[in-house]
Length: 299
Image 1 (cartoon, one colour):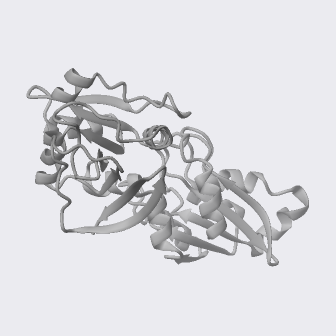
Image 2 (cartoon, rainbow, N blue to C red):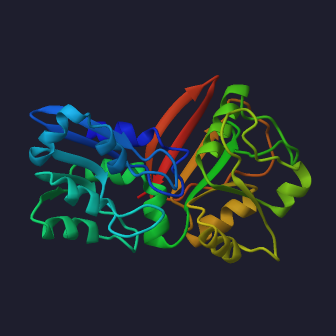
């Protein structure tokens, strides 16, 4: 299953909005096939894993186990059901990392395979498998994108210098911000920040696609933003500020992760950084160029 997770991660940017999935086929204590979901609209992990099995190993399939990080699909989408493919290959056993939360699946793939008298084991490295697709899981379970609140603050806890923009991030940590943008579907700032700073909100210092850009205003409030994300299948959202925009999400409890860059400079006065809520768990801490980046996950 750990190999499934490694494979799945290869499709991190191109599989969206589909989940990342990896599959490994084992027979006689040997991997005879493996694959992952490369790109949305193309073959799923199971399809690619079976396609990788060489002709000399195909007779082994009847006693093989296929490991899949996410439940095989049971419906016709852009590709046929993977559950049916697995049944047609007559494998001996299927090991699943996590049940698929998508409404068209939700255990139906597992049920279909078991009905065909194939042994199915579930819940292997389940937390790891779910976390790998936390955007996908949040979107389908909570009917909204996975929301990341992000800001930088000075050593004395301000977001600017007496109301004027100040460079808190270093060139390297700015590059990491662009990497984050490339990994998420959408990004939003408030109207005041947009008018004062004219942020591009692109990935120009990294590679990948630019997130869909939104600006909150009285005519485009949070409720409309959430509706727009749902309708456009945008499964993750970065909230970059300013302070009032961040507080509006905090006050509504609309966040899953908070990423704060703590700078090493002090300014004496300015716009106070938002207070961190109590229901957070420190997920990671990294130090670059004198700055500290902490990621907090909502408990």
